[in-house]
Image (cartoon, rainbow, N blue to C red):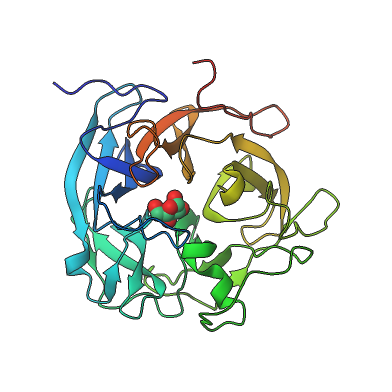
Length: 327
Ligand code: FUB
């Protein structure tokens, strides 16, 4: 009999998992993580250590209940356009179909975003022949907002966002100057069939409380990777990783496409370099799903997915979580 899951403990220990996107489908919690692989290959700022080859879907009937691994839901070998590195995925439900959105490098080594479909939230998922036309970079996160659906994406460094500043891929492009506005994540409205972009992706602006753009040098607040957008009391909350300062922070807007006003920190640094999360309401509570490297004693590419409760203050701000604080 599987053990009950507990807050701030790995959801599963038989495989390494990361980048959890949690959703409530069919009354259960479904978690769509990356599946980290153990290997002795190179480890660098390009993210070569994240050499994942498949996805497993996890689910829980409830918090504090056992977590099921539904096995391989999609494998690299079955994705015609992809060459390697199945990074952080997300899932969405629309048109009586479950959609798995995922980044991978194409045959030229450029990160693109693909879609795969299934009638079942646990998969298996059938990939489209090609990546989403006009897609680039990593970490897709989908918000189905009434009759519209948006995909948010983008990541610096290995995620190649710097290389798309002119609208086409420039392998030699570097990030903006320290005094220039930081690069924002991208957002695109999805077509009704969820398989293409309705229009060209737009850059999201993240500003401070005075309306000034967050600058590239402001590494405590600037966007790095791992966007997630959820709605609370009619407002859109964009949360993301600050990368080099290892925090999950958030910004708020009345519009799903921004501009978003920076608010504060949701999660202080975890064990390991990367931090990546999702936020979901289940029954009457809110939860943060995140990962760390505690199970591997700090090996960056051997991560484990965890969850903890997330609480709002009366003014709609989010209480900062210390993952190793009081339980
Ligand atoms: O898992 C590979 C990459 O590491 C993800 O795409 C990033 O968000 C970071 O967690």
